Length: 158
Length: 292
Image (cartoon, rainbow over the protein chains, first blue to last red):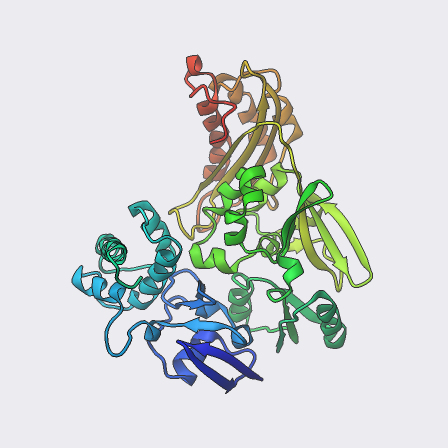
């Protein structure tokens, strides 16, 4: 079937199998490997993307569900070669170790900050509760999200 | 496998007629995991997400109607749910994770018919009814008549779970939901417990509704347990009377998450937590009538 959607602000049209999972469509068909696949069953959050500004799991969606949607992946965050403030905060606070969970963590955090620009620590922890990290132990990630939220209040991007 | 996402109910029925053996899906958070694990795909899948009517949450006929395709996130943030069914909201807050709540739906949680479905104990305690529809027919069933066993429901061929009806009850009631799992997010309940209690100003129980999850093939309720509390204050002593009844009515299993005996003990112990809402002089917070 043919699907049309917006990917990171760019209109796309592609022919795909209806059974194709969104994670495979992104990683294999579009070679956008920023989105990771961890468990493949919705439990690790590594494949988190935004669909119509809401966090979703690309491993539990099939291609037809993207038709007409606005999709944002980790590749859509940097602009003109400059990293998004959230990405910068992750680097600055050492919230990245092996990096595998990072794209999903950033997308989940972006979803949270869009809905709740001044989250408490508990709200940040709940916001990323669907994302597993086996390296940093979450504290640095929470600090990075918190710092990005504060920076936003000072006029930066989300 | 063909996947269709009709934009209206009439289109949905036409698609179904055209496909013959089609399976409906809502959020897909359970279904896609299952399909991939079994590698057995139906001939056609018909998704509900684009049908606006199935996502509605509104007051109708003096009750609250929740469309089967309403996501957990929408329910959680909806003023009607917050105002009238905080018990349900409390349970949904610990269902899955934020993206799972964005995708998963109340109808999916019901049709999956898992004994551990987080929305189920509150729906039983609230006396929810489900509305089932075919193109030419609509019928309503109490939720306990709809869920028949793990993964088994009373859905007939070509029938769709259209939505859930919840009766409003404006008398102030204490509500309690607790889920025990290895962690807060994404945990499948080892046992869960939902309670709704109406009491007098003096803290004497007038009416109680209880429902336990994950301790039997379907959600467990007990008229005997509920009635045994009527006329008593919410104290550990009166709640203790329920424990032997709970022991009798649950039929938990051993699995990777917990042993049957642990689940059995939990089901009884979770009831004792209600003492926290009892009279202050008897060890409670003295806030029995406050919605917390």
